[in-house]
Length: 406
Ligand SMILES: [Zn+2]
Image 1 (tube, protein in one colour):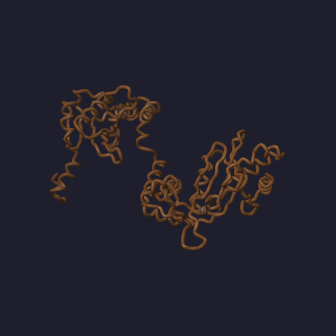
Image 2: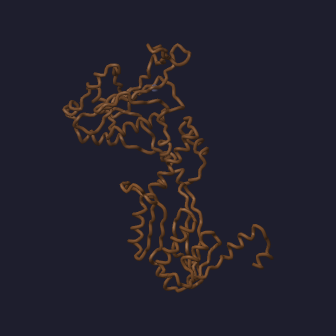
Image 3: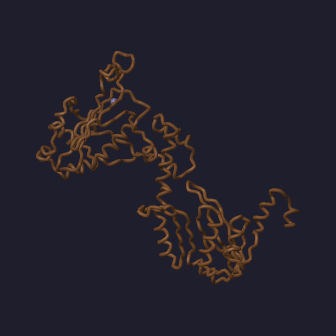
């Protein structure tokens, strides 16, 4: 106890101050350091807190990198998770296999599982034993002396490092278990943010040089996926927010029409539904089109990229300067007669177009759209888009002469 207090008083790094000898084979020794005694020793609480706060401060170096400090006596942690995090960071930085053989409610022990070379020469000191079941078990003769004891009293919430033996006899390794893809993701977050298309091989090379560890390409690939998910969100989780998005659109754009269609669900007790289609027409655009009175509408569809592909259907009108006037759009499963019918019926309801209206529609010659317009708006004019005809014609007949005759 006296030795422990002297270490705290001096606020020294372990290794510079006096070491505490501890027989790690005796678990009872862990109970020797008692926080209650520590309090009753008359130690000033405020001073101790201030001192620990300063010790725990992570100071970035001149290049802006926060270096991981080794454990030191008196170091405080708020939760056990913080201890595990610090242990993992230290394990990666020092390239040692640190682990927690004792993980209890009030005390924790950190040890090193590293391979200790045989002092007589000739590689690692291992002993092979044959068990009663006939299996051969290889165990270490001498374990690495590195040991950290951390405990907390029942009253206090903070965990305090009580003993530090910061000495390794083991060999450093290039395969550290703590170097997980989730850890790597946190280190490459900024790089992926600045260049989302950075190749996995480039990231792998950079990480291997920085950490001096051997990291597989697959692990870096997973790390990049995690980093991307953290930066841009999860596609599936975004679908969960769709209803909120619809309500937000209607609240902020008065008169907006949003129609969300979901797949039929045979079991009505299921809380979630599978997305099918969505139609959006903003109120202000609707109002502007009605005021413009230009009876011409252009229709088209295009493919969506990403993990959940579908097709987007759009309709545009003309403004008073003959410019393109976006009006409404829908995300549908595919460009089919069914989806076009649904889209045009929604549009008809929004723009007050009935079956007898004589609007002019311009579109490509997609199979679904031709019968749909004839069915939904039988009196309307339907014309083909010249650009689409030219695009198709170019495949067979090229040249300015053909183009001029079009
Ligand atoms: Zn070690």
